Image (cartoon, rainbow, N blue to C red; front, side, top):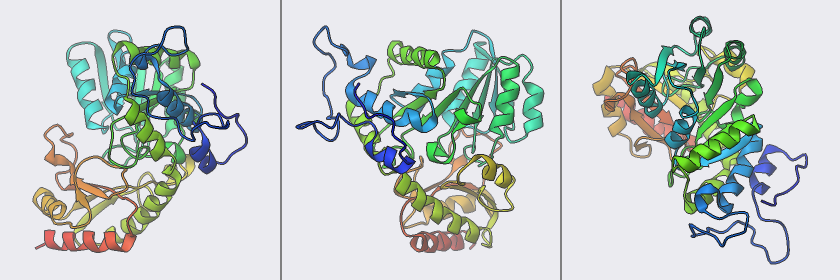
Length: 375
């Protein structure tokens, strides 16, 4: 599809201007939502599942942010399954112990049926990961991890995995391409749930994969077609629109997250704060080396355990008690309310996604909820 040449733009300018129609008289500024599944024969596009204009516009905007070739899918899980579909039967997969719940379930299912051999590991324990890489076909990294906010040494792990001939996949959903570029650190494939911060408005489902190698990108694009995992025209439009303001939203959310995390570390109702932006966090130093910032996600462990965490989550007036993350609104939830959550996640852990509201308003609401949880 026609697109701008690659001038030396800043990321902020790229987000606003990449993935638009040619700047010609009479052309729209945005690619319109094309409500058509099929096209007249003989053109570049003949069937929407293979990549309509809106889908290609989104991909052309996201790919350069990660330094690769982007492929859009109907959801983050559709994207994850497309990657897994590339692995050979019986592949040995070393994966983070704490990873997105849907991915964790899928990996366990594939392991149980013999489709893969799963080796789960604390991804922040570099030596432990290295010890499991012998004979591996794939390394599945998530950094920072969901919901424990651990930080993995992507470069060291990628180098070691490649020495074993393994494919390196990195879920970059929490960091976004603005805070971390795993391909530049050695990963082969990057995964995003664009439902989250990239879309940013809690109004659509969409997944993205970015591959460094163009041949692998074509394989993943074929997976989208034959697995029936194409996103809709409206979803592509909404995610691309959300991408335009990602830099502004992320800056605001991250600034507020820093303030809130520092105050949570002193709160009597909190026994632990997990946030790589805090100097005492185990991932703080590594975050400073491979990320442009610690992000907008925080996890806390509430004094009093699960019951107290539930009470705090249900007592907010501004924070939205709901799952998901990365939206303009601040969300929180006790992760162990989900039966499928990793049992190693503490009962009293609350995951917080900081939005773009005023930081003082967010703090006042969270503080009163935590005060209630202590009674």
